[in-house]
Length: 148
Image (cartoon, rainbow, N blue to C red; front, side, top):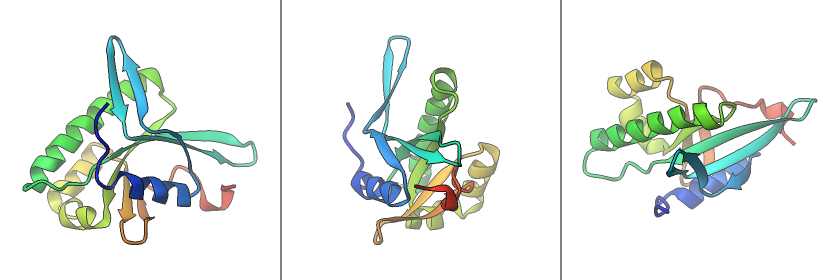
């Protein structure tokens, strides 16, 4: 099992603060003879019918010398996980969790905007100091007013 990212616990706390229940740490995708590990699995009940919305969250700290290299690695991992989830758990949405500074530094640039738009990349932007989610892209898969 891979080591946890340096911001793993902060992101986990932010997800919980936002009303989600962590169901898996890590969330395991089994496909054929392979096992892949997405950082977190989470669920939340939505609406009057109490439908259970489930997500998987891959956490990326973007701490190497090159943010483009980090972006390349994150995109590859995100696409692979999304493909596999579509096969084994198609109702579960995949999100990439990043810090607010990473979002400002690379995802607000043309290259980041292209990735978000053309790959339909789903992001959770976390304020690491407040240990809280500052933004969901696109909007959260649940309405704030329908949380427990």
